[in-house]
Image (tube, rainbow, N blue to C red; front, side, top):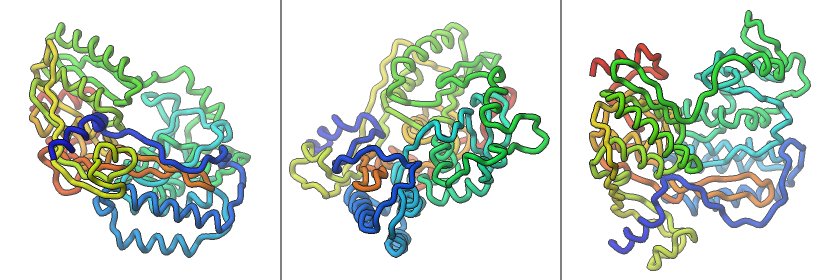
Length: 436
């Protein structure tokens, strides 16, 4: 068992990475074209999809109701016919809500990025779509695009989108908005092209809409520092993307120089918009917050695949294994913040940002505030990618389930210590942290 644990430690330093499955090479498919696949090709793709997910996921019952899955497979098989790649995706993606995991299921097909000319920032809140130039700028509600009403679009899209909750599905749609819109055959020649909320004096042409916003608002950076007054400060961390590691390290160094110089006593770290990334970034942040030894996991369940078979020589491909798997880290830094720490989370806090949040809670590093995360505390990880041989549709499945160190409540998300609505206005934020 110790040999297994040591071997795994070498590969699982990053919570969620993507590896590519082996498939026959296919040419790039333009999903905007009505490329017709035969029923035989569609059937072959569906068989490949089922074989991949059932032989890759370490424990489907972690998120999947098997009876619902079996029923959905039967219904999809009965609907197989000659169809386009868009039609195939819409059919196969009826499995996405059943998989019930943003790390598991069918990705939206790529499309020509210029075909819909949607060049403004899109934000989805509940059942409404808003548009603006930047994330922090003034936005207007969009009623319809290309004769497609946005409320109906969101209701239909969430039925076939990956994710554990409504808000996570909205987040997925928001990040690939034009790709999902394209799947619903939006009319690019409709007049007007965009219909906004009534009484908003903004041109309805999408390009004009974008230009009309061009000098308003401000860009929302991935990493931001804000002084709140009275020795309180706010760090907003919107990603733990590994590609941003150097930028993040420089940001933290500069911020904490300011924090120590200004003798900040209360620090709020907002990861409510953070969809995750790599452990290197969250560990770097934790190194400024604590000297406490911590681990992101207590145990794991793993599926043995060609990606990890060399580390498990006594097992064979297809086997699954569950083992105790702490990954202890001892933070080392010359200066540690010793004041009060609050971490803001909500339904969109996911993947490595979710791990960071429960480490803070499990090891008494700080206080969590906000809303329960949409993703589970015990979450899937190390996502493997597989491309279906005929349609080119991409399927994702995790190879691991990571179990939280201490306070996981069945399959629930990370539950905050203080429940409040986010985002918080500056005045509200100061009032909340002042009372703690």
